[in-house]
Every structure is written in structure tokens, then in C-alpha cells.
Amino acid sequence: MVFRRKLYEQMLQWKQTWQGKYALLINGARRVGKSTLVEEFAKKEYKSYILIDFSRTSKQINELFEDMMDLDYFFIRLQTIFGTMLYPRESVIVFDEVQHQPLARQAIKHLVKDGRYDYIETGSLISIRKNVQEILIPSEEKSMTLHPMDLDEFYWATGNTASPEQLRQVFAMHRPMGDAVHRKWMRDLRLYMLVGGMPQAVDAYLQHNNLQYVDEVKRDILKLYDVDFNKIDPSGRASQMLKNIPAQLTGNASRYMISSAIESRRRGNIHTIVSEMQESGVVTLAYHSNDPQVGLSQTKALNAYKMYLADTGLFVTLAFYDKAFTENIIYQKLLSDKLEANLGYVYENLVAQMLRTAGNELYYYTFPTDKGNKNYEVDFLLSRGSKLIPIEVKSSGYKAHKSLDAFCDKFSSRIQDRVLLYTKDYQKDGMTQCIPIYFTPLL
Image 1 (tube, rainbow, N blue to C red):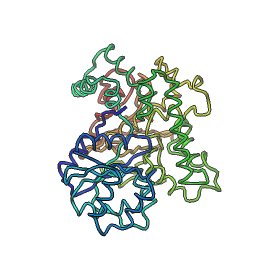
Image 2 (cartoon, rainbow, N blue to C red):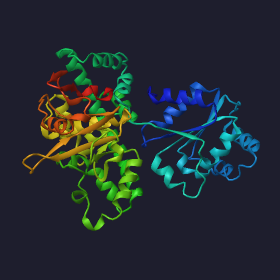
Image 3 (cartoon, rainbow, N blue to C red):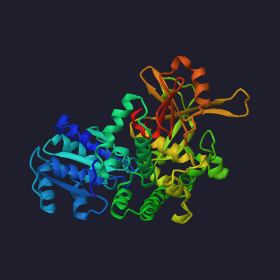
Image 4 (cartoon, one colour):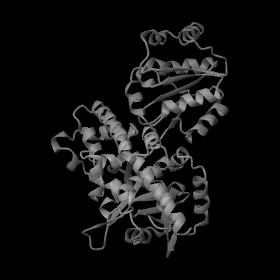
């Protein structure tokens, strides 16, 4: 199925604003829907298009990019091979999976300067960077990232176009909506957590209404990522770190503990591997801020971070990857609204995904308690204007927020709003806003 995606509107702005002066590069994790989105855009917004999928192109097509001196000849050959007529300023050429043909990426500079047609490229950022060491990187390029489907897009996929706008209206009121509405939105959120935002998984849910079938689709995607990560690092360390994410979060450590995921003798060059995992779009990092203030990026500790799956649906499957679907208690507990505290890391991963997809970089902060044997931890920090919004996440309706209170006392002059994200309806607890988790993207 072709799903409605928010990035489509940004692509329209690119087309209308730049009028062929820049190519568009859509990057993101594999199976996130890049190719489908771009082809749908090409069909709807242009008189004609040619899509070149470099993951399975012929030698004849690849050879076209070896000599770009005569563009008239290049375009005639291209139209003949694909049997498609191109119209100046009314056609687009799509370079799908462009990382497989670095010469096509290099050719963008000359093709954009020629100005006859528009150009859209797709690929994963890590694969693109690995394959461009010896070519001229085009500066005539605008880049956008496609994330897994967010909650709005999931609603749209299920045919519910009303709830996204209703959520925005209610959030602006800062008031409770009552048990019936809240329970419905929490049920919707839990279903979104279980299915996730990978288009194949959403399609499987809509076609079969069977979470076991959805789980099988997600396992196939995780197997694909495992293969990709073993290409990033043939020693298997990237793959081990990916599989260890649920265990790391449930362990309540203040950072991702490399020592518990990888043997000490194999930890060399780990920072490069982590960077490449992040660039793949499969994982999301939240960095520790050493001195939380508005310029959070200037205070991050590069060696202290938490790691999340970019898609919580995949996270749910990964948490019980070595067991059968029927043994995955997260499905059972979430469906019955009985998720125990020790499974609260599912909600933490969800909040990380929602904040990142909404355009936020992720940071957190820990500091010792008065007793000194434990730490306070603020799960996420957002920079807004000249102030900060500290966020604590609870997987239940329990509204205690000791860490949040301690943080706000410590940095009182830096605080705009203090937020507790939890599973009950909206309420105020002193100066703390207790906000249902489904409002996370609107913060």
C-alpha cells in the first residue's frame, strides 16, 4: 500500500522553492518507505518520470554514467532504454538506492547545472558515505530524512484522519478529556507501539489484522538490519550492540554499557562503529549533557549515551527475538494494559522515537542523589528558546517525579516547563505537567 507521509509536503516545498536548482536526497533506514514515497511523488507531481533502481540496474545503464560530457546523448539514451519521454522542467529522474552507483551521485552536479529536469536520490546515509570516497560530492543537493511512520501517519493508514487534529486541539487546552477519550487514545498508542511504523509491518497489520503475522514481518526486517550491520563491522560488534539494546534499557544504567555487550579485547574503534550505526537510521542515540543549558549540543558527552531502536515496533520484537511470538509478553501485557514497571523501557523507547521523529536531538542528564549511592536521572531534555524542558517518563499512572524535582531545583533559572510523561489523563501536580504519552510529539 502507498501511505500518506508528512515528508511529501516538504518535498513539494523543495520542488516549488528551488525550481531545479538543487537535487533532493531522501535518506533513511532501509524498509522505511523511501522508494515508495519518491515514486508516488514522481507520479503525482510530474508529467513523466524515469526511476533508475541502482540495486538492480543493467550494465548498459551503469555505463551511461561513465561519460557525462554529452548530456544530449545521455538523455536520448536514457529515454530510449526506459521508453519514456522526458519534458524540460516537467519531468523528474529518480536515482533510487544511489549508494550503489557513486558515479550517478557525482553526475548530479552537472545534471542540475544543465537544468532540464529535476532529480531525486534515495539511499541510506551510511551506505552513501561509504561509497563516495573517490568521487566529487555534489553541493547542489538538499537532504531530507524519512523516519518510520509516526503516530499521525499510523492513524492516517488506518483510515482515521480525525484523531491527529483532535490530539492537537486537546493538547493546546492543557486540560483532562475524561476516561473514555483517554482510554481510546491509549489503546491506539499501544497498538502503534506493537505494530510500529515500518510500512511493511503496517501493511501486514491492515491486510491480516494479526499481530503474529506482523511480528514475522518485523523479524525479517531485523534480519536484514543484522546483515547490514555485519557489513558495517564484519566482527559482529555492531550486530551485538543492536541486539543488546533492550537489555541495556531494562538494566537502568545511566549509559549504554559497552562492557556488558562486547568483550573488552574487541572494543577498539567502537566510536566509529556507533557513529555508523546511528547514520544507518536504524538506531537513535541520546547523549548525556554534562552541563544542561540551551546549547545542549555543546555539552554532550560523546562517550556517554543511551541507544534506542528508531522504531518501537521493531524494539518490541527485538526484546524477545530469541523466543516465539506467543512468548513475547510485551504483546500480551500491552494489549491488556498491564505492562509492568520492568517493561517500562518500551515506553522510554517510544518517547525517544517520537521526540526524534518530531525533529529533536536527544539528550538526558544524571546527577548523584544526596546519599550519593544512586543517581537522579532526567530521561530527556528539550531546548526551547532560552530555556529547557526536562522530561521524566513513567510507564504507569504513578506520578512521582523525584528526579524531575531535583533537577528543577538544581537548575531553576533554566527551566521553561517541567513535564512528566505517563499513561493517565492530563493533570497538574504542583508546577509539573503530567501529560499522556501520546502527546509527546507536540511538546
